Length: 161
Image 1 (cartoon, rainbow, N blue to C red):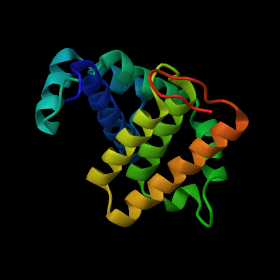
Image 2 (cartoon, helix red, strand yellow):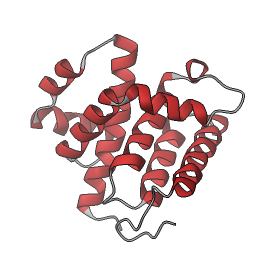
Image 3 (cartoon, helix red, strand yellow):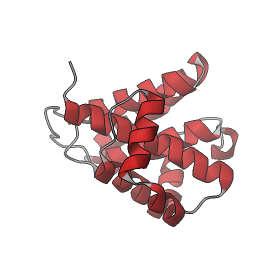
């Protein structure tokens, strides 16, 4: 059984993907989104998603991190696309990949396998089986690149490298 803390981080990941998708589709700015992230809003969105209330600080960390580093994140994702361009990928998959890449790069306290598995689960919910496999493949390539670059170290309970 997952811990409550884990469920809150899982919810933060799901909400981050939803919000990044919304920002891309509707052209909303991060400040407008952050103003809306009240406890009442998080409770309501959790109820709608049938999840725990999100870890607000982790959600904000993902959102701000993806927005601040989006150009670099997108370049790194592009480097792992074989025969595809980033613009050819649907908006939900882009949001998943961006969030996952940010967490893999910056959230050293979370085991890599947890991050990858959680985003694969999100992609299963929002994507077709073919899209899910595509996202899984990209995340695996990014993981391998991180290992080769020596950027993955012991994290949480998982040992990487």
